[in-house]
Amino acid sequence: MLLFAMLATTLSMRVIASDLYARRVPNRWLLGALLLGTLLLAWQAVQQGIASTVPHGAGLLLGLCSLLPFYAMRWMGAGDVKFFAVLGFLLGWQALLPVWIGASLMAGAHAVAVYSWRSLRLHLPPRLMLLQHDAAQHRALAPVLHQVQQARGGREGIPYAAYLGLTSICWAGWTLWGAAP
Image 1 (tube, helix red, strand yellow):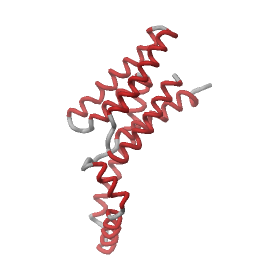
Image 2 (cartoon, rainbow, N blue to C red; image 1 turned 90 degrees about the vertical axis):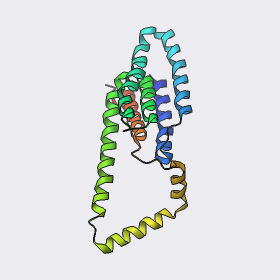
Image 3 (cartoon, helix red, strand yellow; image 1 turned 180 degrees about the vertical axis):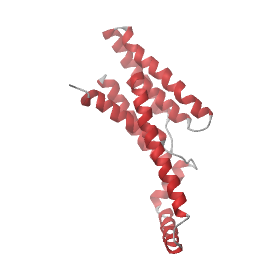
Image 4 (cartoon, one colour; image 1 turned 45 degrees about the horizontal axis):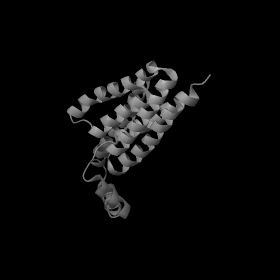
């Protein structure tokens, strides 16, 4: 369990950074984690028996199938779906519901904040609107923000994979250290 949690945490940290920066979840990271996880799973099967692999296989299938409809409706990207499936493989099917709930709550709060700001911005007094506009132009000129915009390549939206990664790190930590008697 510890090695799977460490692998999931390492992958999650990389995905969080990539999703926040470029709104991308690199396939090679997912594939690499899947291959390392498969090796760990084979070792676990030899040590503990084939039945110990069931939660991981079920997690992969359940993770993929549960978010696939949202991808089909264009509500999320393919990287989010694949990442959730890999997390299910690494952490087991038991982790999927808590990780999904936590990530969805954070993504929902993010969406509410964005839409509230957009709505509030329209009702600002003219002087504050001018200050906000000037601040936005100043931020747009910052080199770092320009690099982020280039890295995103026009991709917008809520960084759902980052929220999945954050909640999976919390889940791994809680199950390894927080749930101990």
